Image 1 (tube, rainbow, N blue to C red):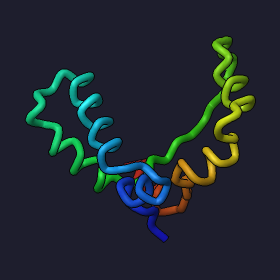
Image 2: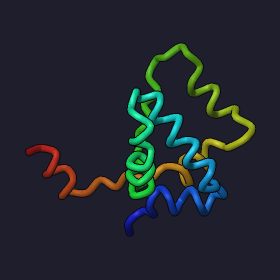
Image 3: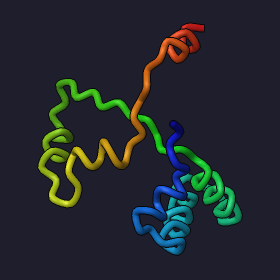
Length: 99
């Protein structure tokens, strides 16, 4: 089962096209790219898959884990199960990474 495209996922979560383009414009500016690149950044983000993320809370003292577990807006569970694509480890993945 493949994850939905980022553009589809954001639309299903209520993100408007206008908000998405504002995000793309800001991202493009922060990367130091020309404003002519905004449509390309938007197209690339719309076609991207949701990212796989592995959280490794070692001995940091910045309070990241504490902040995320005590968040009021989104729970840690909703972030993990709705916002981030689950990482599926298979024998094929492991063999491909060894090469």
